Length: 380
Ligand code: SF4
Ligand code: SF4
Image 1 (cartoon, protein in one colour):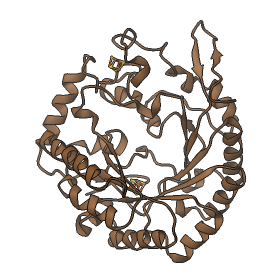
Image 2 (image 1 turned 30 degrees about the horizontal axis):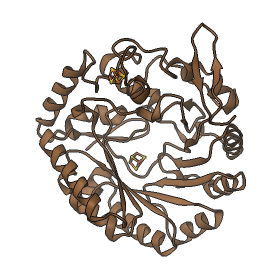
Image 3 (image 1 turned 90 degrees about the horizontal axis):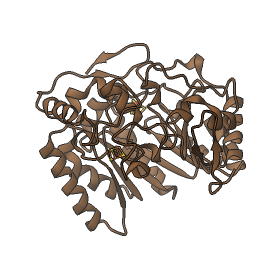
């Protein structure tokens, strides 16, 4: 299937545009040595014995490539906890996929990096919790995580491998954003992704501890704009703004079931990494169906694909094919109905309620958060 061929799925007088996906996020495991309180993994984390096997993952990759996928992002949890990661990277390269590793970095020493490189890894994305070591280690709940990350960043650059640094920002580290930008630049990152926390799952649970104030957000935005000018030609900076202070929603996942899908550690195929937070929605598994069948036929993918599902005000809005009504997970989390307009849009009847919640959360002190953890939670 090619990207320019629009298929028509018309089973209930509902016409839906279907395109080839271009990228897959392969969540190899939910296990992780860190416990970030904003983790985008679901609250009910999968245990190791539920994970797909090496052969399952290889089949998923082959089916994804046949469907048109060009890039695979190995993620988690911490994907390097999988002993078969090199084998999976090798398979991805063999079938022509661009391979990216999204990692916390704390488990990769020189020997492991060498073996990932020998397997054919094209790109590495390394997350930082802060520039300030003590706060970084507190947020990730790891006693020397920051030192390990710095070591890895130097090793990646010495190996000549492209490096992106991910900085997830929130009220507890946003005042150090300038230092985070400097750190990424000094480490020689090609790209820095400054992403404000998106409030689903663990982050929603910890929202009062993480929500920035409007003034913090405005300062951060100015800082990013100035750094983009200063570092032009040296480092690209992507910036993901927080929805809670927005007037229009983000084009979440570039539209539901349009270009991307996510495979969970246990094999569920999801339109986005947070989709399991939508209660009552059933996601098909690669254990029972092929990736191609799921992409085209899964009721979960077709439910919000395109624009025909939209209620007002999206239905008659001229931005409906620009932002596709925003984020379904956020609509569910804040209104109890995934099919509602994303409350980040000021045309949504829930918008002012969302904005008020942001202001109220940001005004709280520093309440304890819970760390993300398989089988329960620990206090921060
Ligand atoms: S956000 Fe933190 S806890 Fe979650 S997978 Fe990444 S490093 Fe691990
Ligand atoms: S009404 Fe819907 S389509 Fe229009 S801007 Fe808001 S979310 Fe987007």
